Length: 280
Image 1 (spheres, rainbow, N blue to C red):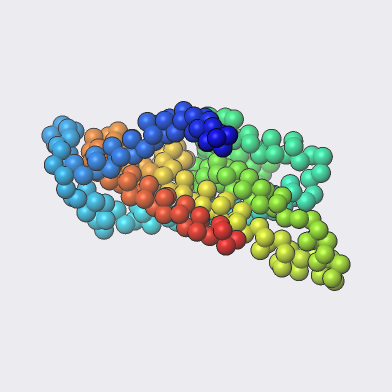
Image 2 (image 1 turned 135 degrees about the vertical axis):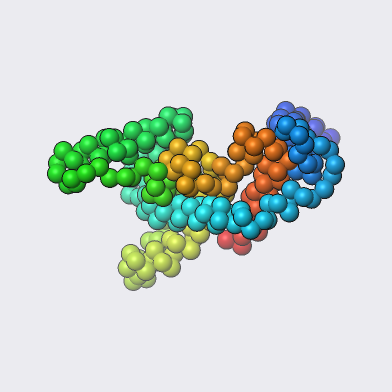
């Protein structure tokens, strides 16, 4: 009797969150899938004749360079975030001491500012008349302004800046779960720091590595604002292609098909992570 009441109370507490997810996530996603099966009519209208033409267009070879460019930027961003994020997460977990809280708060600063404001700030810094070029010219390191903005470097810099916390926080959580007695036991058995890291710390932190990589790679696939502001039209990504279908080309069914494929890839990545997690 008591367990039944507790179960009913749990369901009642979950009901608002479940209703919110159904109304604002599940139903829009289903509507997106339905829209992807329609076709585009005159003047941007939607003709509800169910077909797979939009998915056939999505795999057209003309979009392969956009897909490859997107995968390249997402992969490079993920790799750089792991290279930069793992030492930072390790320091926060094992070495930060009483400064840990302040450093974690500093790490969260990109979440506290609007992405639009942050990217415009990078444009001010990286522009030909920006702060970076002005400083380099003033101290004599260069004789002419560098073309840093609207390059692959500026796009990658913006992506790493924004997504680095998505990598560090899962890594930090995974490293925090490692019993310190395991590390001490490795030292007691004669292992040096490098061997202890390779044999103990790194294997036990792999779930955090996988989670951080997924939480960085998957959102990067749909990012469009970074390439729009820091890369310009030369570095057109999948997110820009989807955005333009809805906002400029007024081809909503094709945009919905591209979004559905992107969502399917994201769900597949999360499913793969869930398959990995129990074994880790």
